[in-house]
Image (cartoon, rainbow, N blue to C red; front, top):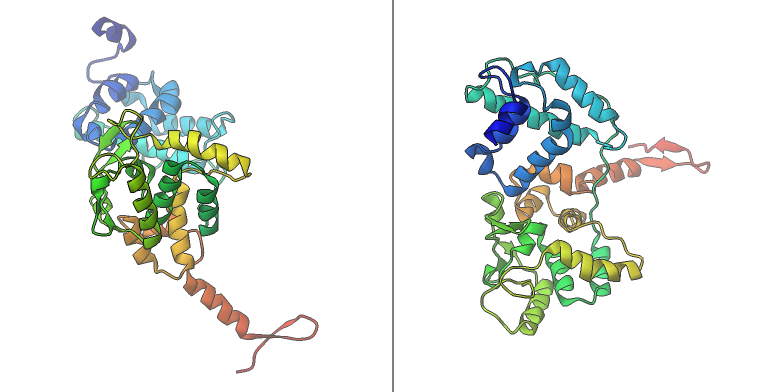
Length: 329
């Protein structure tokens, strides 16, 4: 490998090719390997699929702001990749992080070439989906699989994400609450994403009844995976449960599957529709800050906004021709 690297990455000392630096130094740094596995996988996909083909042969010091601009513009115009503004922003942030790391560790002394680069205009990101309470109930009723039913119920009424759902064990249910101790990502067991994700989640009575019934059906175990694979040593993959035990039944009833995360967004949306304050929803979803809850999860207008518009409507009086007039106070 040393001989191959020498042929592929000939450059002056201290100025390696970007491909070599990213793959052999950056990705192997402890500050990167200690990140959540899903984050690492995302970084590697961004590099391998989008940036390496266009920047891999550049040297670390050879990349300039015009180079970054050209690459991002090229990616924005690529019809096959069909990248939105959010994806391009992630690519830009990743590349900026690479250069920040290089500067901080003495591999590069110049200015960060990503700083100040502006993104080209692209299509707006597609709106993410949130299941309504009516959809969730209909989906659970439509699916025959007991694990599929329970997995959807837990996702609907606790807001756990797919990795947390996959990593649930029976011992995580304590005194009426669900404690998130781990998550599974691509078969790898990890700790919760953040400290806030460890907060207990109340189990509502409707969900408790379904958990109790499933628990009895499983033989009333005190420990072990809540959704064990056939051999029992590992949990079932939630993607497999969706593919094999949920989607076929939904298709037969012309119902749409929008992924596991739509349940988490749905919980935020349904709670807001019931008048629950955003800061309470934030704690239920275990977000680090309320802005995340408001921007990406709760899909309806706050009640304060609706009340304000209703007040405006009441302040108007309508004549017989349907023309609005200001109500005289």
